[in-house]
Amino acid sequence: MVDNVIETIWEKSRPGYLFLPCDLPEMKVPVERLYSSLNLSYDIVDKQELNETTKKILEMLYEAKNPAIIVDAFVGKLRLEGELAELIRLLDGKVNLYDTFLGKGLLDENDERFVGTYCGFLTQDGVAKSVESSDFVLHLGEFENEVNSGFFSYKLNNDKLIHLGPDHIQIGHTVYEQQSLQTVLPNLIEQLDPSKITPAPYYQIEPFSLPTDTSFKMTEHDLFNTIQDTLRPGDILIVETCSFIFSCYDMKLSGAKFLNQMHWGAIGYALPATLGASLALKDFNLPGKVISVEGDGSAQMTLQELSSILRYDVNPVLIILNNSGYTIERVIEGPNRSYNDISGNWQWTQMLRCFGDLSGERSQSYKISSRKQLDLLMKSEQFHSLEKFQLIELVLPKFDIPKRLREMLDSAPK
Image (cartoon, rainbow, N blue to C red; front, top):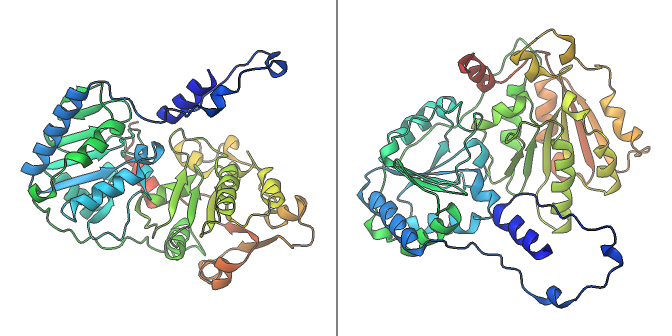
């Protein structure tokens, strides 16, 4: 029973539950199962259909003059990064590469074939035009929700589109429920003949930056530009389900990983995720720094994790957006409603003393109210090398939101 649950967790990449009788801990059980290997592999239900679908996909690829691949969230969730890297190696720079918002960080943005992030009408103009003109699109690990797809506004030619998902695949308008990303992708790699691929045209897209609003001392656009310039390979960027996350559609990660909770839109995620990611870097002795962006309202959901971060002596950077409440909720519904307010007088730079670091030996806190202060701090070498937990309170305008969030709200179904 236990092995079955573990194997299913691995196969589905979903939580599993064990309900044990209350007297089981006192019972003697055979130890033989401890020495049996788990079956951590994906079962192929219909080998003939697998080969037929693989052949169809490859025929479409070989006929294409402007092929493209979109890499989405389930590639990472199903631990297929190695297979993705092998596929890209075999493609030999002949196919244009795109990621999605929830798939950011899975592709090397420095690859000469990487064009940008595709998210429907929210996509940077040049990126959207290039992928939507493709005559073959292989969408790997599709995760279809409104945030990831720009309110389902993809404009791809369905006749030339192949979806490889975790529980089915679709070639054109035909769905194959016995096949999946986990089985088809390795088969594609095994049967691919790169010499039959026609190289796609190259697209040069200008780097994206957000304009500075000089009517305020600092805005979320300034934070976007500073983080984008600050990230280094090996870093982990964690962004709360807050207004700032909508800036990240266009952010260049420069080899960093990107974690968020926009699958379900839950708030309070970033603080415990910061602890978990920091412990992973520490336990596995990995390079890089965890940089987290957390709203002041969301932080109040799981603030006690500040104590755990200090207790386990890890050194992330936590950026608190002090904009006096649930700004993302204000712009969705009720800008001046009391339910979007919070107690706005929290002393954020004193929080780590409150949670136990009385002398400041394990932490450093800053209160930042201008873009110049932010740049000087985050672009300094000390910021990257300091072996302390750093908490940065950013004082922002109450109704400041990123450009992409405004575009999404203006175009959302009413």
